Length: 499
Image 1 (tube, helix red, strand yellow):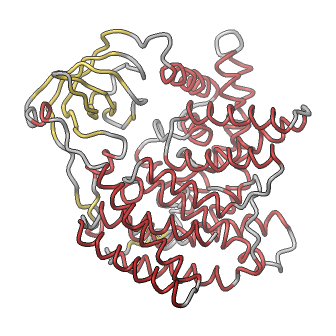
Image 2 (cartoon, one colour; image 1 turned 90 degrees about the vertical axis):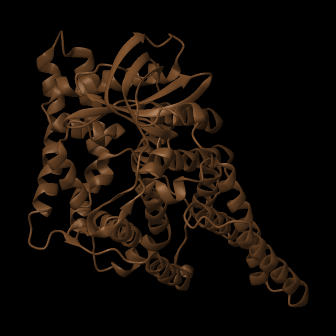
Image 3 (cartoon, one colour; image 1 turned 180 degrees about the vertical axis):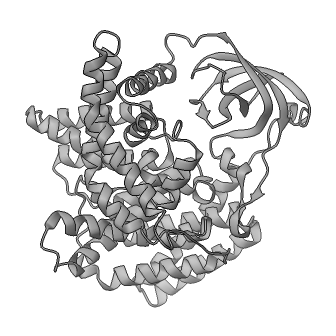
């Protein structure tokens, strides 16, 4: 555990130094000198701490190198078109992001033998899908950072670059040139997604249908700006985005289903892995979902081979692999860092919380409160730093909602599938079977809206230095370390393993 923690921490530190602080070779050289000194101390003293320090410092340099390798300027062919009205042909690479007044479509465009990805901002009347070949027209502009509430700077340019998007195509229009080829897997998965969402729309009205879609496969389209802000302010936004929590519930269902059918370990693990990959592919890949999927796949392997599985080690390994794949996730994908922080809280803090809540007789209530407290405590320093929003009622709101999420996902899945199958022949049946999901969604909206109307529901803090975030997490790590004898972070395929 210590070796893996040193490797991951050092690698992440190196990426942070390069991507955020733009540290260059002098810092890398200094880290190597310190690593050499720590290595020398190993021979003189032989303490494990020096070995781990030397290993972490070496991976600081490796992390800086990996981040540097990922840096690249947009093709000069497109840079010459900036602030001009342009027209490109390309392929839609992601599901359109619907907003109140427009929709944003990621398109992989080409010009002069070079390719890049642009985010086309077009009217909501546009009708395109993943995999289609399109012609986009608009003003080519580079995305720029902007100042948010409390003086916080949001690096919108880097946030888009996480997904490979280098330009905005503002005031745009888009038209389809030809449909996606029949063999396009992303296009097929997107069609399944929209088939399901259309089924939800047939089974229940808005915004309940959109909320049901968000609960199952993530997404905030159709909720409206006011309701989306309500979920953010109430601390419940994680239930309407594709998160590791959704993935782990699906994994749990698969384990139960395969055990019920009596599937052998190896065969059951293979079927479960395929089901998870299919689910995440339909819902849309995100860093938190990839993290949870990788953890679940490791768990499935452990179940198939009979090996024990430590959730803490898996989290560190998965975080390392994701950052090695895309270093920008660390500093510019809030969902990824919040997901990792929340999962760490559930692994190392939830058992401590549960031990302190022994006075609660109901195991379900004690578990729900412990996991909610641990997750909220683990993400609070980052949320305050990134957004400045403090939700005093986030914990009780989560306690009221999270125990019902597996049921809500199941009922919403039933509503979507039956709505898609029977909305034409038996529309009444679709609405009837969608009623439980409708009731659960109405309950979730009621809890969210009530929690933000209570006195002192939202507090906003001014911007503060990142060093305070590090100090907060050092304190939490110290608490977890001091209580480590009471923690057994063996992986259980339940909500405690993810968020």
